[in-house]
Length: 198
Image 1 (tube, one colour):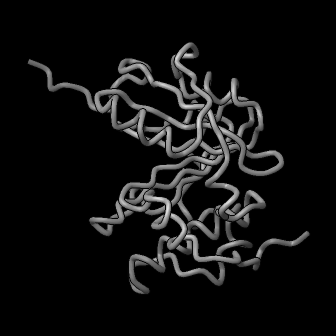
Image 2 (image 1 turned 120 degrees about the vertical axis):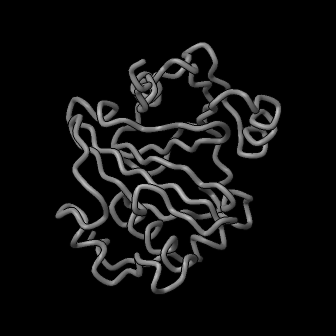
């Protein structure tokens, strides 16, 4: 089935808003359905996993503001999704080692900002590029993915792109699904910033 020009049944932006994920949405789509593998790749604490729905994930995130909590679970056949519920999670290239593909996107709806130029593609341990990479060209030609069309339209374009590539758009069943909430240890990913020599 060709999804290169498919469109969702509902606005992706409005769904995120309705389910209180738009103020800060930080997600990664990973081309495997093996949740334990993803947890290992993201260096989470394996003993911290709690199977829960979105409402419970929000509650637990509010109770653990000092930790980074990532909600990981199914997305579509062949794909899973990881959503940062609290804290700050910086995805690194090596998370995609071993021929995995990862698409990441984050935005701050309250501030009208997108990170990493909107959407980033990793494959086999390397950062392949931003939205304009060859792998996305067939899917993105008709989408608004610049600030010129407005922030809401830009984010909608990125989320439609993710849906086309992974074979599933966000929908109400997606938000109703249970996934596993994991804690990412503070030292799991060494800082990107190196101190100045003294």
